[in-house]
Image 1 (cartoon, rainbow, N blue to C red):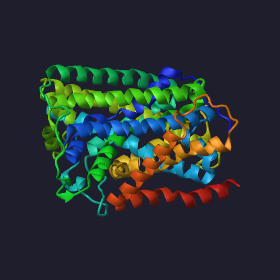
Image 2 (image 1 turned 30 degrees about the vertical axis):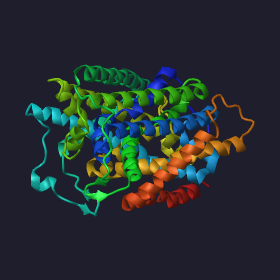
Image 3 (image 1 turned 30 degrees about the horizontal axis):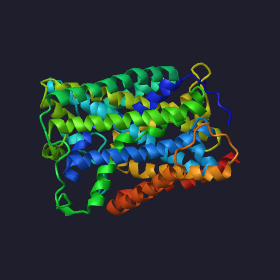
Image 4 (image 1 turned 120 degrees about the horizontal axis):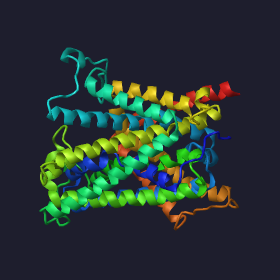
Length: 473
């Protein structure tokens, strides 16, 4: 497939794509549920560290493949070489229906909700519809109520953000690049400021000494420690989600076979370091009981409560930092994902016009528009909230297959030059593959309803593939 996209992103911008994709709201919120699962600051930090190391293994495995297959679409193109067109299409379909669009929708909604919370403190919250309209339920299941008119002001603002950022990326990737570089840098320095202030003003002496209690329960239900640890890591993985986005932009990154592996490696290492450092800083402010109590409260963000405890403007600072990070993360998702649909369309496996490149702006403009309207649907329906709960589960099916694909390509393309080789081959790809299998299996056992719904949504792509493939012949 030939690309008419313009290569213009350097290695710094590529690193910032990785960082911006991962740092959204998770790092500021997930310490509370993780504390409730594990009841120990040491084990919470261990969950962040293990999740980070697993993510790094996946990132390094992905980096080797990116070094030999540098085409727009990232993993979609990798999977074609590894497993064929059907599996590649299922990844692209899952990205459009769940992984990428639900991520963008959820983070945009968090941006709007956070801004509304700030406005509410000054008695100028976003307007909402009357209660008799906002509580209308169009569709009901055990796990999900379709209430399109609830929190309508927040939803309209979230849609407005998606519209604004889609319009920016429509006009050229250089604009999305500038947003990512500036706001990504702002978020990194903001987190470092939080760390320094927490260690100066924090008073909790037992950051790593709180012991794990013998009762392994959550919401009154008995669980094994391994199960609770996996639940905590699932929360952490939401914060690490997005590390592979940079591969989607291969058609617009200078020297992609060298710069994408560099970006994946250093971007992931930077985020792991930031997450471990800032969560240690949060425990310097409050003990495990402090965060367990926060976990039971609705519309309460752990980092906001923690910073309020040491600085009168601490909560406002974190709230503004969340606005910047979610704005930036939304931009990243909306900028990178359309390249998947662009690649699929050029293979005859998506709406044909999605494969067009704007003659002036050199962007897959129609793919951006299609993604934008699907995000609107997810935001207004509120279904992104349910989809994000299965997002990590679905993503790890493909992540595991991607890591195992490194071994397949070593056998399939033994003579191909590899600018980057995954360290300790084949140990790291095998460990990541096995972990992905265990995580997917554990999620199937713990949340079978949502897991099978996620699988069903992915497999729904099979008849769509058959229809599109038949049409293109």
